[in-house]
Image (cartoon, rainbow over all chains, first blue to last red; front, side, top):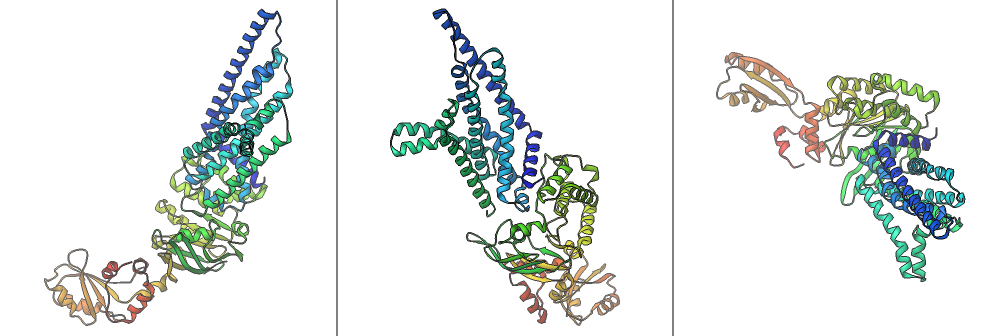
Length: 255
Length: 333
């Protein structure tokens, strides 16, 4: 077992012995389930209306359920993912195990990568469980799987970005609450940059700011458009955040 | 094994350690003695590559801490002030994690874990969560962690804090048994610990090394007067003056309890026979008479209360006039 795997295994173990993952997971799945239920009921109501007016019902589940669901999950992730990441470095510093980790014969890259991977795996697990919604729905109805799958790809990339921001915030402080709040704040700023960008319109600044926000990149994937530009955005944002985490953790040794 | 040359660490304006130089040979146990905040932990953190020194070089097993930190880290077992344990893991899960971080796999890992569990008496708790263990057990888990990969160099920051007396003796025996095969640096502010386990003592105060020697020689170097304790049951009113008249006695102080006196005498002169003679012939009821040698504790207090302790100590030793220890306590640190 390599040191990175050792860190991943240890972090996963730490996640699953604490109640945090179970509570966060339960809340996440409950909300996703509720949202899915509401959108499906709305879609059903619309279908009945259409039937009465036109005598036929051709409702598009992709538009009425999945697109709505995917854009709502963004909010849920924004709130729950900082709770998962807040402990990663803050707790090490609080409990004085940080010094132990930093004097172990492994590189800082491996520590940051291991911690990120562990929380990403937890997140993928939760995301996988939401797969029940399309699976169950596919038993009763027809819809196009392709945008659903790209939507899931979008969620995975968006989650990775949110988690990397959370890991970075966790490295900044030894207080977990502060870490969670800093990542909420950073993510909201990233979110609102989309609004600011559209306000500035088609100017150079407007385009740059819109590009920096995750909104349009995520929307493309939810709509079923897999564009290299968007994938590059997510991967480079991830690398930048993990690099910043590396710098912050490295400088924490000097204090 | 360890070679530290002129290392200085500054935090902004504050200088935590100032041109510290020392070395530890293979198999030697060195005590780092100093009051809290003297720079012991900072020095250890530099040696373990946790933080870089502002100036100077530190080398462990020939590898420079600044240039080849991974090589240094592989050769060091480090126990920080607070045992670095994860409360949500069991003892064996924790040791397994530590071993994997250090590249131990398979049978090597299993045998190393078994060896440390045995050595530190962790058998009964190996499947319990560390969060539920007592302070003493956590400290032992911390030590097991430091020893797990059998490193040639051990750096232990106050290893016996929080242990009960029996455990302290066990840990000291353990450290003594490591001498010869391992180089050990041990920081402590408990003086008997330094005398009990170490071949050499470095006294650090205010970020500077104020003395470095064997425990015996340190106290010999600094002893500048013989002290004799005397207890009388029927001490006369003018006992202080009359004891002071005895040849060779320089100062007489009242001791802690009634009838107890502390005589300071010229170096190299044993006044006990004369004192006994005077006490007995006057019928003062002599019940105790003993010579007091300066303990390491006195040396430590003297050195760390005064920046130029060692210079002053040697100076005083050559002077006939004697400063009492209470005077030293008042001098500015």
